[in-house]
Image: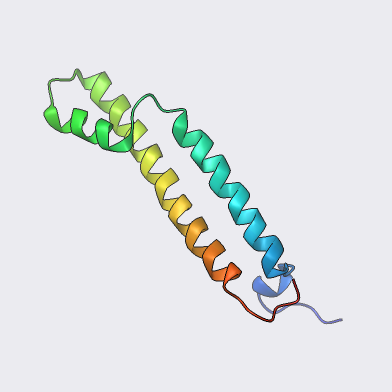
Length: 93
């Protein structure tokens, strides 16, 4: 055994099937978290753009929008990664 030369060499590799399953779990968790918000991302953006909010309300809405955008971004990555893993042929599942 030799000492790893990069951090990537320290990460254990998973079978594509298992990694895809992990991404599916992440997607489900993100969907559950997104469902906890009282309004959709689009509704919150529309409400913010309409204005007329007190400063604290606008700040809270901006925070909620940024959280929802982050959830959407991570979910997009997870979905893309899962599809890529599921499309692998001839792996050792």
